[in-house]
Image (cartoon, rainbow over all chains, first blue to last red; front, side):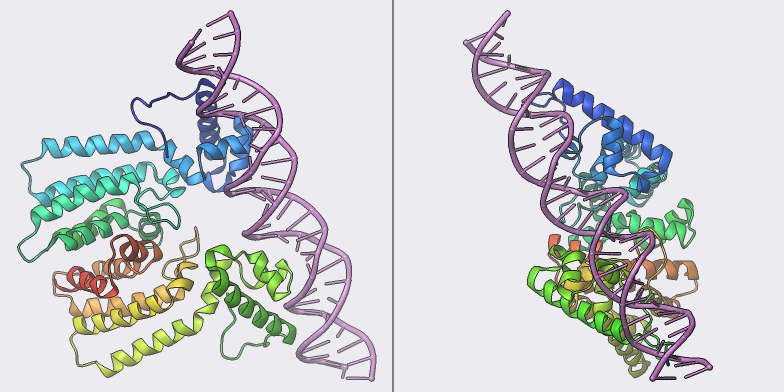
Length: 199
Length: 199
DNA sequence: ATATTAGACGGAGATATCTCCGGTTGTCAA
DNA sequence: TTGACAACCGGAGATATCTCCGTCTAATAT
């Protein structure tokens, strides 16, 4: 969807780039002022001084837009995870998984508002195509689960466990635990530890 | 929301009841013909020959409407669960939990289309108030987890486990497993068994 | 039977989402 | 520099959601 590859065949046209920048700036400003929920795509288009068509051509919906606004943070999360794994290859798989979860939950908390506008961990509405973020986490987690698996476990179980673990960070589950069950990030991690690691 | 208590103080007005019936009939017909996704509230109102205001006064959104359409099934699920527990009080908590999960997944499969229009397992959008279905399942599951808990477990963990177990039946998770991971209901139950029971 | 009134009814209209397409402009090749 | 085209732009408008309020009516009390 987003043409963010390092060297796209044709780089973005100048006017397109300018519009994109104005949209992003307008969105951040309005989100800041009114909260994501209360800002419509129309408002964003007006504030950015572009037509609705221009806005929708670039971002199919508010979710897409929010995703773009945190793309940098997502990239940073991934590099942080990779370097954590590099630096701690001596630790047990359990310990490394906890390390990754700590990074993930820190990211989730930092971007909690923008994340409310987009469920990057699962899929676009109605079509169950994985998001890149899900794929990456999935790969990391499955690897670690496999590493810690004894002979009685099997790959399907690791995949299922990874999917479920990732799902705990969805808006649906994570915010319910935070707001209704009043879990702090630390308590939350403790529960994950008890359920997914202490086997 | 829905005044379905056995003997409401004032019973529904005759015209109101008639309208409700026409709405339900119209909705079922249109959902059947076009699929839930492709039917708008407007269409339903038109087909039922009521104004949009009338429709929206009764059902705040399509999700509410779908919920009403499966309310009977939900009630039946609960009574089935209760009588299962009565009839099998001799079994281990693990076995009883599996029994309940089998009933739940059968219900989920039977009503899979209407359930796509409503996430009864979690909450209304944005406000994290539990649905009655969540509350009931929560209570049943926590009870069984507590029963099977050894001294090293604690109540918070049982609550968390129950929440997570219920969340696996959400559209988000369940349909992803079914459609993308190609899990049959049986395979799905096997995974739940491995993760939540075989401790 | 009639008056009273709580509550339901309808539909106009405010707002939002999203599309379509005629017109415009940046880019690149010549 | 210029021509041609791919890509982008704007905004009108189709459709959907949801609300508001003047009007009407079913239920109850007298």
